[in-house]
Each structure stands twice: as C-alpha cells, then as structure tokens.
Amino acid sequence: MAGKKVLIVGLEPTLIDFSNPAYGFVPGINADKVKAGLDASQSTLERLGYSAEQCLIDFGETAEAVLQQRLEQKPYDCVLIGAGVRVVESNFLLFEKVINVVHRYAPQARLCFNRRPDDTAESVRRWV
Image 1: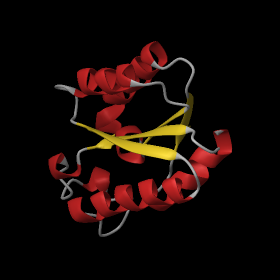
Image 2 (image 1 turned 30 degrees about the vertical axis):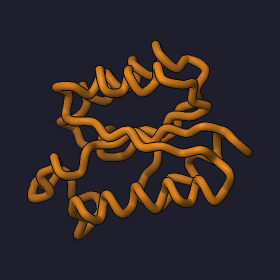
Image 3 (image 1 turned 90 degrees about the vertical axis):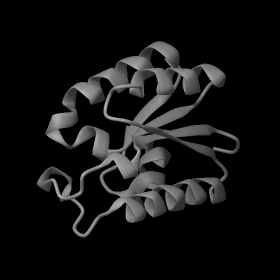
Image 4 (image 1 turned 180 degrees about the horizontal axis):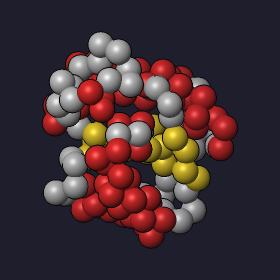
C-alpha cells in the first residue's frame, strides 16, 4: 500500500440540498459534516501510507471534465466513488458518467465504493 495513489470522488458538499430526503441516508448530515468526513477519510488513508486526494464534482455540468482533468494529471491505483454520487437515485446518470470517465482515463485503477463517510479506508483497503 505504501505510496499507492487514491482519488476520492464525491459531490461538492456546498452544492447538495440536504433538505432533500434523498440525502437523508446519513441522519443529520450537512455540508460541513460531509467536508469533515472527506477530510478525515483523506487523513486516515494518508496515515495508512496511501497518497490520497479529493476530487469534488458538481451534479454534471462540469463533473466529467473536472474528473478527466484530474485523472490525466497522474495515474491512480484506486478511485473511490462516494455514496452521494452512487446512492441517490437522481444521480444515476452522473454515476454512469463518472464510471465511464474513470474507465477511459484510469483503466489501471481499482474502483471501490464506500457506504458511509467513515468506511472509506476500509473500502480502499479491500482493493489496494
């Protein structure tokens, strides 16, 4: 795992409408808690010896271009796609787009998915 590069892909928390019940899969969640969870996940991965970075995307207007640009900068060993992108039904097409961008620009990368903000490291460790 030493030196393995991980990219954490998630929604930009300030763009999320947390009053929408679709985002209630984590009770009491808000933008500050999401950002704190992302930062904590990144720190945990770094303590475990990974090189971790975040790539925060919007709901589709620039998501593909932002992710593509990040993946073209360097090779990643693992790309974790966060639950906010995957679990919320209205983000289904965004999830497909993200998967296809990763498949095209980082075919060597393992894909993994977290269930909650606090199981990101466990998710990455399953595959890398």
